[in-house]
Image 1 (cartoon, rainbow, N blue to C red):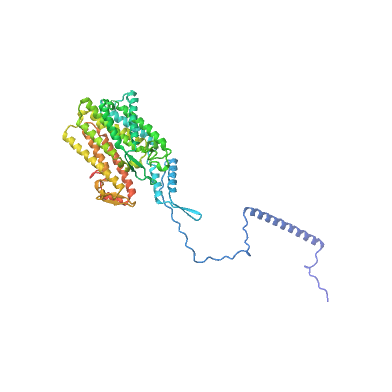
Image 2 (cartoon, rainbow, N blue to C red):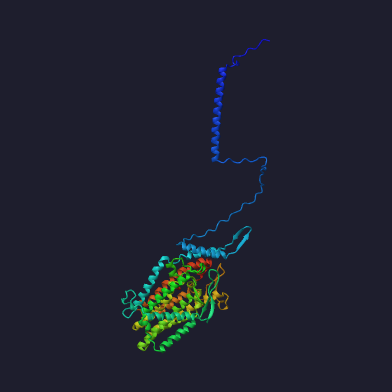
Length: 543
């Protein structure tokens, strides 16, 4: 066969060409290796930054199956309870509220389910904490120091305004620069001896023991009502002083010194109670306390401080009432010793004051159910009111009639009308307080079966007939009527004897407004029904 001719394209390459192609292939392989190395390095750097996801072993993986169509219903989350946001004035207030919250939560029931414990806190706990937080702002705060100064200045102003030289309410009284006019060690000793005797008599275990209103934790405190023992001792001491020839004008001559002694004792006693109250637990602090010194010194830190077997707040109140009665008696005896007679107006005013003090101290259990006793602590405000305001400012009518007997009311018919007016006020005061106290103790008392009442959502009832069907605050109305009756025998020539009724009506109006708001929040629709049944708050057909 003839041999095939090779095509030019498939002709064998020369050795030179083969060497060139080998060099080119080697360079291409080198560049490929270099590019591969660069890619590998870049991948290693990127893998250091981004983790490579793990590859599942398909051979071991279980086949994924879809869930059944019958899905369980989704759990509905209950919305959280919206609570009012209360701004606390200082971190100490927040700490006090937290202590109260912890105290109340620990008293709640705790139920364990599995590994988790479910805490059941009732709505009452939340409302109590909220009320405490709101009440924490009721105190004056740092203004408490200014109020202390104001009350002391007011006490001296009123005491010095009624003197033998003048008796003007709106005229600055003359001021003697001698300090002996304002302070006397003997007078201070007499004042301390009197208050020590009242506290000593309160410790004697004689008299009935009654329970007060429920506290925040549900407990009740016991109170020994032996004020009548102090009344008997005061009467016996006064009779002995008169029979032994003691100077009956001792209080009249040393009046400003007695005022200074009462102010100093009030300051020291309030400071002592404040220091003792710093150790009181959160559930025993008064609502107006916020942890600051000036506020708690003014309002009080502890709600119900107790010493031995008696309540300090109860005995301080009793001391002021009996001191007021004894000062009146001293004015009456001093006028009789000086003139050998007693003006009928002065005798009537002293009789009114004595009846009021005797009925209040004898029925002091009525005071335990009042809002003042339940919500106010024992601070300078309450101590000053009992030891300075009661005996030396509330007795201004008797002091005026002692210093200015010619200005007194002398018409026997007018005096008889004033006597009847005071009797009406006293009946209102005693009767309404008795009804309220007995109804709170036992709403099903047979003696109160004739009274109508309105049920509340909290399970309590509101009296809407009897004394409490005339006005919503018949006890305040009785106080106001008596205050006017005490000032009328002083005539109309001077304004100072009428300071007490003006002060009282302004105080009572403010208290009525605050009580109306509190009762509406507390009783809700039941209080609205009561306001419709009894439209007048304090004075019939007026307010």
